[in-house]
Image (cartoon, rainbow, N blue to C red; front, side):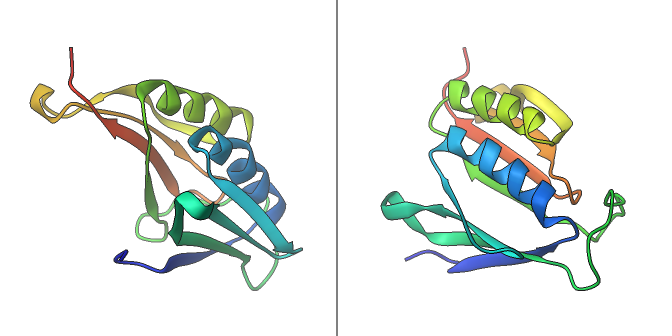
Length: 136
């Protein structure tokens, strides 16, 4: 059983957010499903149906660019299977409207063996993808 069933948040620009998540999540073998014009989900399908993400349009309409204000954004961390998957996510995220927040590299002490990349989604949320593996 998962700690969470799902995590939901609002987007001030659903088309840009959908483009980002649909363009980058395939690198992690995740599926993005748009069920309505103002709503989409990110799911692991049968491999990992829970938790899933639910992204819905913010009340008040779209903003051209989300401001990066501390305390108003999420930090989402997705698990990757390999360094190659981390790198593929990073490239796909940048091509899909994400903004760089940390190119693929080892993070922390050598003993952690943690390789990750970080990007901002169109709403300013930090999306991190990482893998734990022996660092050489």
